[in-house]
Length: 148
Image (tube, rainbow, N blue to C red; front, side, top):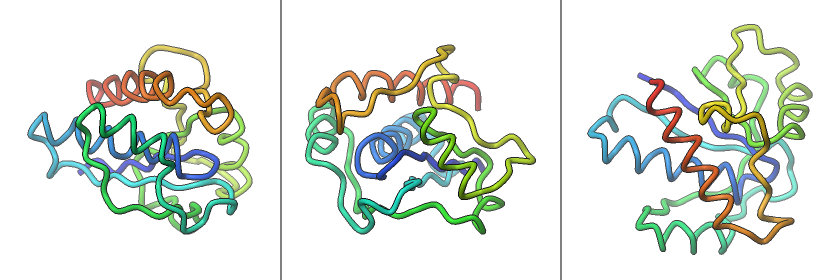
C-alpha cells in the first residue's frame, strides 16, 4: 500500500487538484487498491472550505472526478501515517517543517521533483492560471506513479 499526502498552503487549489489527479491516474492504471491518497494544508486559512471553483472547473474539463473534500490542516501526529508527503512549493516546505518539526524518514518531497524539475508549482490563487497548475500537477503525478 502506498500512502500519499499532498500538501499546499490552503488545501483548496493545488494539493486538492493533485489528490484527485493522482486518484484518477491510479484508478485508470488499475492500481487503485494499492493507494491511500489525501491532501492537507499547512495553514488554517481555508479550513473546512471545498475545492476552489477554478480547481473544480479544470478537473471537470479534464474528465477527472472531484470527490467530496473540505480543507484540513496536516497534524504533527500524522507523520507516520504517510509514506510520502508531497508539497507544492518552498513555502509549503517551511510550513511542513514548522508543523512536523522533523522529517527523519525523508518523506517530504516537492511534487515537481517527480517530473525531473526543480521548481515550484505556481499557486493559482495568485496567478489565476489553473490550467498551468493542472499541467504541473499532472506531470508531477504521472512521474510519481511511474516511480511507484
